Length: 222
Image (cartoon, rainbow, N blue to C red; front, top):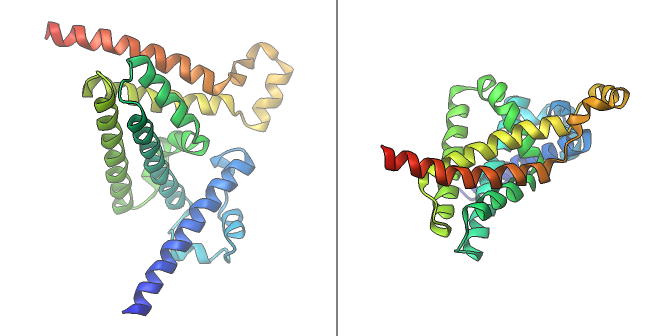
């Protein structure tokens, strides 16, 4: 029994090591699209075939990393809410922008999750991801509601905007080498070099302000 417990602990530790290595690999190579299992296992100190004991594929590994990103983002938001229980809608928008921008690999993964990762793993693994992501989402929204005067509907819409903006703007502000070279040749196309965090703060702050007015009017009219 003790041996089995140690084995389970070892597996959990190895799985975590691979997640840490995958995140480091994405940061070092300039994005999730450039991550390879060979690079991840080398960073984690494993033989390249060893990863299969913990993750069936690169897609499953990256989906697990996205799941961990949800957990960390939710925890960061809840920690900030615990420190400040009088947030205005604009404060909430800035809080979401700042906490998600602190996780660049998660921002990168948001696009890949929607485009391919969820569809390239088993149904059970996709179900687990959805379950954990929604749990993190609901905990995040509940904390923001307690710390602000915003409704659940307003906050759910704002979080959806945060995810969309972060996923899209991260890709634009981190072009591939080919696109980066092209933008140097044609400076007027340099919109791709937008400043990620400031743009995210501006749009989420403005969106939060608008949602409070718009959804309040809709509820009164309904």
